[in-house]
Length: 303
Image (cartoon, rainbow, N blue to C red; front, side, top):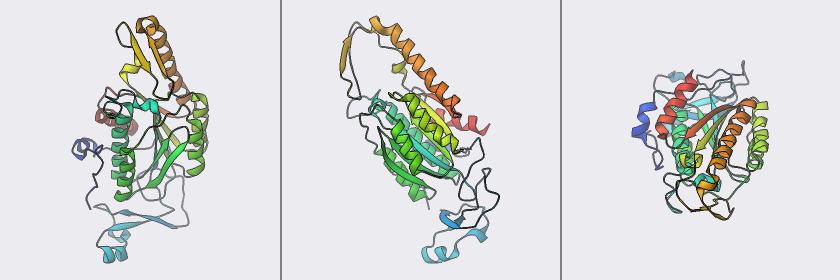
């Protein structure tokens, strides 16, 4: 069976450059089928939990021959006492993620578009590593969750949902993260992609800390558009909020220094909160091609 490539954010030709690489965990994790990650389990009940597609070179004794006889497709039975990487992609879909878009209808160049390319590529890499991937969308609350799975049809569903994300005005994140924690009980890896331009930043990281207390690994991917770091040159501009904050007419020269100081302080605070809560942190500029970001990220995690 070949990979489903329906999403416009999935460029299989470009991803061939990183297909030899694998997303790896820095810590011991809990999973649900055989992989190459260190497990918390020292044995188990051997309860059947799922299927995944057979990969060339695996022990043929693991094949479910009844499924093969019925469908002609090769699947391996997965059991609870085996381990893999269980990964959940959590994407910020608030209005501020539209920043950098060419227009209201064309989101090319926006933080959201960058996040969609990067998250889609991550889902592909994770699946290629025979691991499970799921998706959660965060607004003021938790809008949508696709639990982790490992079949190609499941990953295609994740990628399709990423492609069709619609942003909403939202200024808070903590409630959505808490609901995600309550609905997702398995240990694994949480990859949180956000610009963290929220009013409840400290509360949001208090919610992230719940995942760490459960001994899940949390990776913070902090997206920053280069035009956010400094105001444009010019005599007068109208700034319009993306989350219903209204409009402001001013001269950038009057506030440039204070703005850059406050933005730098905000970015430093996100990093400090991430590291102090036991998360891995990576600052990502949307000016860097997403494949370059992905390759560097995978190399860094492989240690």
